[in-house]
Length: 362
Length: 232
Image (tube, rainbow over all chains, first blue to last red; front, side, top):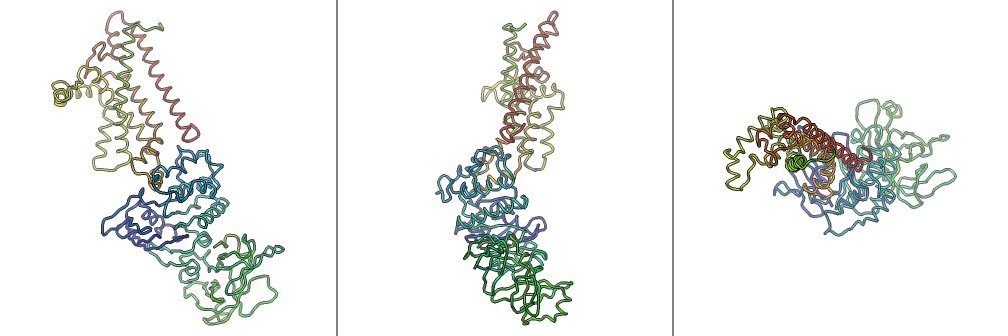
């Protein structure tokens, strides 16, 4: 468990942060330049906060009131950087074992062979870093951080330097890591699809301050935060279980408290829990259930909120059972249909808009 | 032609001895200076940078004369060293090593500094988060990465030392068997009638030595870079 409360100043930029992160992935999400990486550097001990307190598993790492400061090399915090930062003069195996030089006396909770198996590193051990692809290098960097036997893992946009294909590959390994190694992970990202797929908790950073924090589903359903999540990618997140997999059509039927969602290409077994992000721009609103339409998903719900931003488009929050769905429609449609809070409507979602990038496994 | 006379052999071994000791002395100092110049910011850094480069631009005679004033038996430091530690530089081969170490220092500092500046401090930060303290980071990450540069600097200092003339002859004079290195011996021979043939032989030796050192360093540094980057 990581608990921190701190302030920091770089040039004219102020950062105020308070955070609690337990086992599982806590995402620090925000636009470039909002202070995400600075936050990680402060936690890791690569930067010293102006004031505050950092506690990891009841071990105080920093306390400005008592002038306590544990240096980075004694914090036992693994750090996976944007770029892999492997040691060019060492082999992959030596890179992986580097942390062992310094913690001979701590028990190995994360054994070497397990990490090699988890990240599929067996074939790379005798290679040199410059003979690795970007994705392979990042896997080695993750393994290297894990093998330093950390009590907390920090990941700073580990996918941003990779192409789309490699990104999917590393995402898969990070999911395995999250599920197989019980470790608090603080994951920094500016890509909402990564956050939705990986994280349990999210902290929304904006201009150096926390704008919102909580479970991913909760934060994503708040329409006043949409501006910060990003207009294009933003949308509600639904947690559901796979009820059936229809092999003939390739559609999975996902059950959630508001009904049934049909989604293509879900790589999950029946009974598995999944998380689906529904982009607001992919949701339409109808006053009555339409017939003769290609949209597979038609969810009955009630309008609970209509955003009051200016502009031509408007976000409408529709509660379907206990779950929120957000629809982005034109202001013109709102007045044309006479949409208002409390009204019963249908949310229409094209199944194909729910692609692989929108689903994650819990 | 191919065999050396005992005198010539003495001159060559003395030259190599002086060059080796001056390199051994100057490289650690050069590493420390390069580290400070590459990695730190402080008031008066430009002054230190300039001072390090002085031997490169000053007449060697000036360096030699300053050394003589400071470290000669009547010099402030020289007298102190002799009475308290029994160390004498003036008119000894050790003085020759000191003079050439000073002359080679800027070359070594430049080469090492360049290699330090090419090491990404973010990679060192990564080592830090893996549990290595500053000393370990230097020994296991920084040093191996700058080794080709250190080697390059050492060879430059060594070669410079083999060729050192002005500062040496001013500081420790031209004493056969004690301070008479190759260039000094060649100078003496060219000044005495009938010494041309011998001078030429020593010139040949000089060329062979310097060229050998350069080729050897090129080979070693290629090997090292190959280990690190997979290509030269």
